[in-house]
Figure (spheres, rainbow, N blue to C red):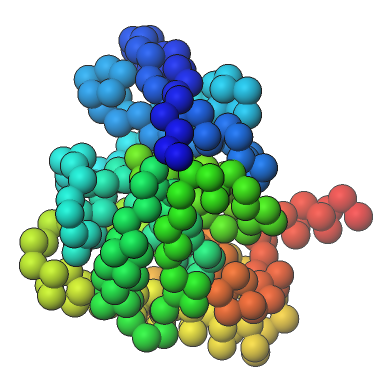
Length: 281
Ligand SMILES: [Zn+2]
């Protein structure tokens, strides 16, 4: 049986106070694994100018709002028969959910997509597309699983995974971040291209250069007792001819080394914090 009941959420834009009621399927609140539901409110949904993410608790109360400022090329929200490109996927679940999926793929975490009516071909097509996009050294060991709403409600012990709805609601995610600079950069470059083979080339090039950085830090961790983030940024600039190294890039590399490759990243430290600690002692 397909459940159709919905819960209405009264959403107020945090920037201009425009108000609108949006509907969320009620099954998302019935899950055992439910933490905070994250919903992207794109431009044009509540007001014309702003986009943001809302965090909703199990009782259906909006707990917080966070603004997002993705500079991604616009993709029309529409459902396609075949999900052959990343653009089709963004069209289905939206930018925010796609960035979360990319993040989970980087970390090699299990990913679940909940569909109202499971299309058995979808799982095959999505995984086939990912297999083609991701280079061998960056494969997802779990693959993406598609399940229906009832199966989702009965799932247990699934904290360490990403679960999204086909509408793009984030049902379960092990992280609090909602800005994904590196994934956004990757997605922006890919969305500018129409040809899948070109998308594939860009995707693999960017992941290869990211992988080089992982290796570089991996080597450093073997030969040094402590690696300071400031030093790391300087080394990156020289080694990879990069003008700017963001904190997010360092955090992402640490998370990938930790989750995907099970490396101990506790040696990577922030210098100021250590100095502070020393002075406290
Ligand atoms: Zn607004």
